[in-house]
Amino acid sequence: MSRKCAISGKGPLSGNKRSHSMRASRRKWNVNLQKATIMVDGKPQTVKVAARTLRTLKKQGAI
Image (tube, rainbow, N blue to C red; front, side, top):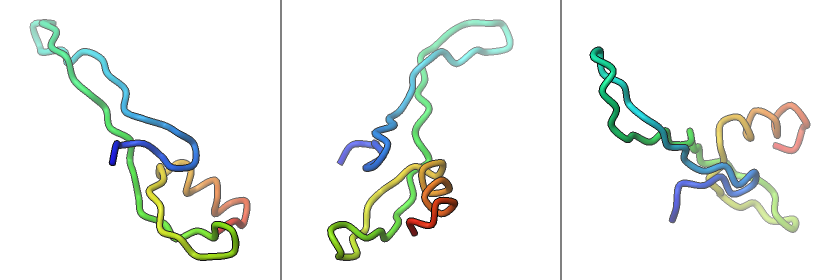
């Protein structure tokens, strides 16, 4: 399974790692995925969601 949020679709971002001498090498920032149990079509289902998405769902009362 890829590192993607099941609800928002957020995925990893890429960019450069910079050393003290400013040499660049490629790196990746992964999404902070958490397992959460949410109701899908009236049934509880465990899905991987981003921490930001989980926070929004809790605020809206969906979880």
